[in-house]
Length: 216
Image 1 (cartoon, rainbow, N blue to C red):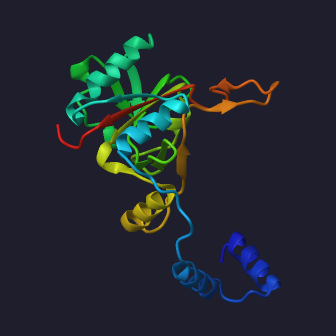
Image 2: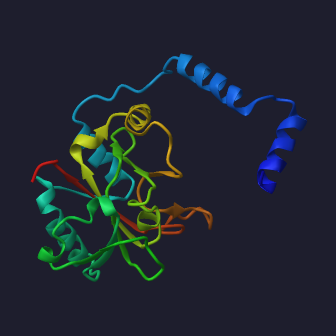
């Protein structure tokens, strides 16, 4: 037994709460028995709702017809923002024809020198204009959190209505949670100094959503 396991075993014994696996099983049974609480009624087109909410959070949005157009859309955005045609990307979007659009894109975790990060997303929530990203070997969280500019590729088929719908989809497709689940609602911001909103305080100062169909 490792020192950590021994310490935790002593803590459990001191708390007098019995077997951890039995308590976990009881908790899961309880959670599964709970009904769904009140939810907002989201009406209308989810794509338009997501785009409007994202823009209200200071994100920019472009909708394109299919995934084949993603590299060109990224190139247009970088040129408009006067950013260099280089980026780091998560593995789930690394297979696009970036070179064909004149871009140098590398699939790896981000470092301090990276100015632009391109990621996919697990799903997007129309209710709040929020992206849901999952960490993993092919989807390091640093790509969306460390560079000053974050570009997210959002398949329109992965837009759900509410936060509850996002968690239902997550449980259905993954079961257990990954190490990190990140909700991104626009650029990082703070109002700590004189209640003046500053973008990019603790993360990207620009967030750009590319909404695309699943077929090219």
